[in-house]
Image (cartoon, rainbow, N blue to C red; front, side, top):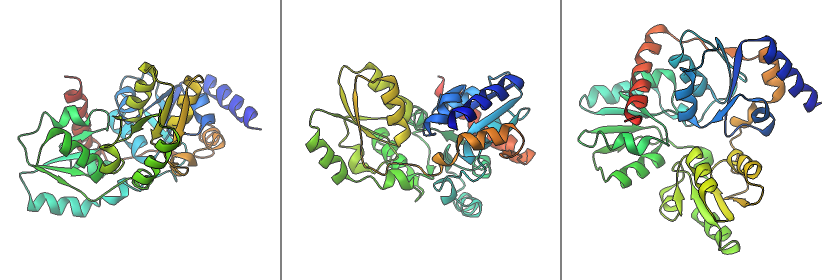
Length: 305
């Protein structure tokens, strides 16, 4: 049945001038039919360069919103409208506006895992892959970093910048990883290299052999001569690595390192969206898009220096 659905998706794609974008955390079937697979920064930087008028996004809502903001002339369709991000929901617009009113001199730096409304109130956006480089360019500023306190702590430690105020948000999936999990797995696989995403808690990050975004973790494995790796991020990365490097062994940091929201999008959802039977066309307020685009293009500009 799945084979049939995938063939129908490929056939539908030939009939449309469109592209399918997928995040690394998507299920294998989605990645099998996607035109481009990547992390948040790669996909963000890519969308404005695409020539096709229609984008089917297999990810969570903030990603599809980001695609629309950077390509307002394109039709962006979120394959599963129920795919949200709990961390993005940990920032309310009212709370951020109140903070800005009380702290008018703070630079607002938002992780890309935020809604369009929050990006519109931000000065700069960052992704985990470019956060350190960008934050090193604003070390002389008072900064509010939101919403991820774990990525924020990592940035604060690495840049040695005490002028960063952290929002109390987090990724529930990465937050659930414990040092005990890492130590237990390391005792069973002492030769394995520990690769950790900076959305994990600091006690894991400081004990890791390498810390990086999903793409950086995958690049590290590709360049490494080691054969065993403990993967401290979502299951989808491990699945991609197993496919790319069948000669190497990979161990998930803990068994339930799975983002249920990222896994919500099925091949049937994508097919339904392409056939006009499902999905959601992303529509955003014009003013919000203009303001949010400034923070996103600031990210792209600063990260390309």
